[in-house]
Amino acid sequence: MAQCFNIIGIAVVLFVINNDFIRPLSAADTKPVNISSLTLNTGKKIPSIGYGTSGVNGLEAALNSALEAGYRYIDTSTYYRNEKVMGNVIKKWITEGKLRREDLFLLTKLPFFGNRPEGVPKYLKQSLENLQTDYVDLYLIHSPAGLKENDGGLDSTTDIVAIWKEMEKQMDAGLTKAIGLSNFNKTQIERILKNSRIKPSSLQVELHAYLQQNELVDFCKENNILVTAYAPLGSRSMTAYNANRGNNVTLPDVLENPIVKRIAAKHSKTAAQVVLRFDIQRGVIPIPRSYNTERIRQNIDIFDFELDDKDIEELKSLDAGIRFFKFSEMAKHPEYPFRGEVQK
Picture: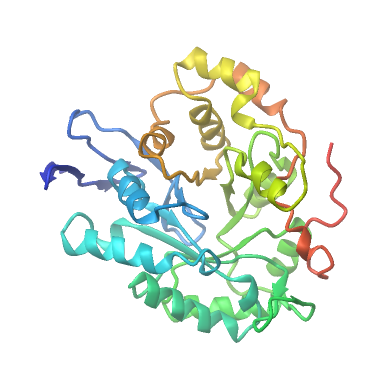
């Protein structure tokens, strides 16, 4: 049974996981919203939408808003330097009886500067301490390209197969329930598959209407690897970021695209809700990030409508191979994943 009650004037929502659905109730409405879930190749359920925390300002308040809105898949990384804040928020929710650890799906990542076999147990242990948990639900190698731990320079000795074998040991030890990859290309994933005892459960990559990566997504589906989309709304912040670095390149805004806006108006939804729904219907898990409470709530409110075939075809037509996050500073690394990539 699901309940809703108030603590100190704040609506608190309890959830039940029922087969393939997580069902949140709002204080104002007793009608449940069905949030679908998918199944990893380990058999574990994972919510079909998550909350991304990279670069989120005021994370404590934002994470509270996300949990109140119904997010139960929370994405972070050692590299984001926010795990302690997350751990404190989550501990408070559990201590106050608002949720149980098993209600959450926590994901973190091995940092770029930990990309060596001995770095895997070191940084996973650190993450578990910061998150105040005995295990994470999914642990990813953040990047196939590694950095030196002491000065942040490129570490050309990165051995992704050796790192993966250490990842397997962490799963054996119960410190993570599943393991996966991030920012790997198809060739690198194939190398892992050929040399693994435990297959990757997930691949997290930049993916949005302008970078749909259909070949990579299809390859992952063929190998029972779930794909998660970071920057699913594009990245408005990257234009400002580039300008601050002296690169005055204006990047296209996914949410201002006329086709996206027209489809949004048709369904009485926001542009963000349309592109997130597009991911859901592709079998891709989006992890939008926001610190705005209203947008946090809107981004998860995408399970009460469906895009029709015409909508899907129009959104597919927007694919232009435009990558916002190129990690250009790693371009000379032998494992740089985007080498030779040609933008349409």
